[in-house]
Amino acid sequence: MLDKNMLQKVLNEALKTGGDFSEIYIEESKVNNISMEDGKIENALSGKEYGAGIRIFSGFKNVYAYTNDVSFEGLMKIAMDAAWAIKGDNKLSTLDFIKLNYNDINSIIYTPSEIDISKKTSHIKNAYTIIKGYSDEIVQAVVKYLDTDKKILIANSEGLYAEDRRVRTRMMMEAIASDGKENQTGFYGPGRAMGFEFFDNVDIEWHAKEAARIAKTMLHGDLCPSGFMPVVIDNEFGGVIFHEACGHSLEATSVAKGHSVFSGKLGQQIASPIVTAIDDGTIPNSWGSLNVDDEGTPTQKNVLIKNGILNGYLIDKLNGRRMGMSATGSSRRENYKFAPTSRMTNTYIAPGSSTTEEIISSTEYGLYAKHMGGGSVNPVTGDFNFAVVEGYLIKNGKVDRPVRGATLIGKGSQILFDIDMVGNNLGLGQGMCGSLSGSIPTNVGQPMIRVKNITVGGRI
Image (cartoon, rainbow, N blue to C red; front, side, top):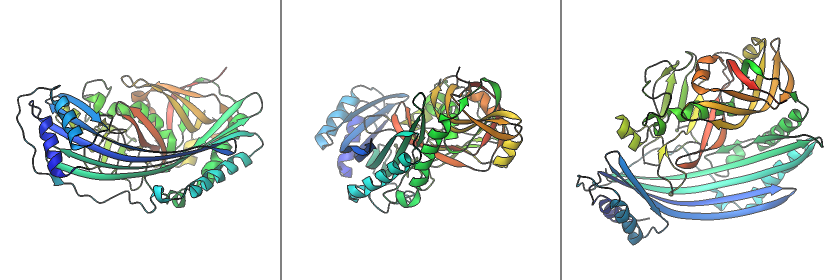
């Protein structure tokens, strides 16, 4: 990567037409993907990517340009090209760089690129064997392994200079059960901001069995009845509803432009008093954790909702200007081809005081959504539609029979008010979140919660 003197020249070049802020982001990344299907390794792909992006502000105006030519000459060229796309009155020079120091929250023991591929494939084959051997009704298993190693450098005209290394490892296990007429799918995809020690910290065999169990159980489920009813949503990936239907509406990307149902509502009650929601990018070795965000701001624990009151937003530098508020360490991007913007890291509803037994036993009739799947959300209105991967009816305060084909339909802002019980079994689930700045690793989470009424769509 370039020395500091060269970086300063590039940043000054970007400011020559009057911009008041310039930033350079340089990235070097390695990716390894291995997948197994039908009993054999289908893909074993490795790749490297190297590139840089330059961003310039003039007030609220901004421009972003990127290149895979990270030579000094290549960066000077895109800095010059970007500068001519933006005009301003300022004539600022860059300051002397002050390197940002931090305690590394994502320490790595075994760098994945140094691990022989045979050790990686042995874990893949083991998970595949467990899934296929779970039942004769499991007709297909797909296991995928991923590791990434990304080194970044960020410098800007305010004198910031930050470096970070992000190593992540993940296993994704899918089971498909069939009776010849109907297919049902089970999935688990644990991931951590870890090296190969991931396999010493995550019980892959348990996750493989769970993927198979979900598929087999749902194959024998009845069709879910539809209606307006109480819904108990379990922990871990159940938090995807808050993430999608509420979390995105708390990002400055939408708040700053007034495109969010939560714009201008700081200090107001937007949820049940028993709801506290947090985005925390500092959880050690967690899937969505970072030492610094993609603008070089240290990550932090952001309490978004406290006892039902809107306490804060997730803010990046540009939207912070628009809102007159400080950045919260929440600016992220997929890679150098994307300008950063406010995004979530590890987002969850904080645990409450109820036990899972209390929540189920106090529900006379309703749906128990044990595992959630994907869905769609209107980010402006918060209207959502989510599939329930594993569901059960609740009758007389007890979990009854499994049901399949259920969907949850509602509005995020209303769901927050309708949460009337919060459990004490917080869990996090891993996923990839797509938005304006690309696809990024995020954790979603919650303890078991009960929503007093949601529209449940069944299958006829």
